[in-house]
Image (cartoon, rainbow, N blue to C red):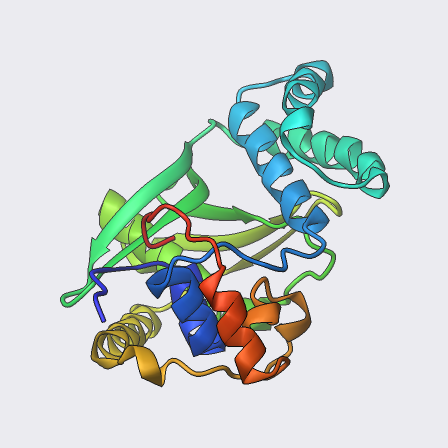
Length: 258
């Protein structure tokens, strides 16, 4: 199959379920079972506020941005009290930095047989020449430092920052920032860890290229109940019904690898 670009999202999906990968990136189908999207919508909403409000110095300024964006995102009222908490904590975070840094860094890194693409939420330059690479997380569960040591997204972001700014890996810190709790979890990766990570990406890219459409079979896993293609999955539906639904499935416009 054709695969000249790969993102963290695309690679995660390949490893999670080949059939879901097929529906999204080969057949380009619209999700038939979007389910409860409140958490995703809320996360995207907070990310955009942080992106547009990076130079704000008062809570009122952030609230104005939040109000202007609110109708764009659809999530339940239970999330409303969380907004002000995120804004207050983000304001404190901003005040601790000497500059706004790079916001929403778009990167493309050539790994040989494939180009890795993605976006980094924020990069701050330190006083001693180092970098702090930040990924905002609005979910309930916070990762531990131990979990971040093996975080594929974190390693991809640090490698992108390393290549973009030509700064040694040992001077780059990766962080998850949780605006709901104002917690920041940080780690540093070694050059060896990033090299191993990139090799795994290349291996996955080659496996994608070698795969045939008929090989993309479903894998039942912990995410099945939240899958947007559950009604098109033969694990949960009779094969004949799946075929009928596929004939009526809606295709979406082709996009990038994200």
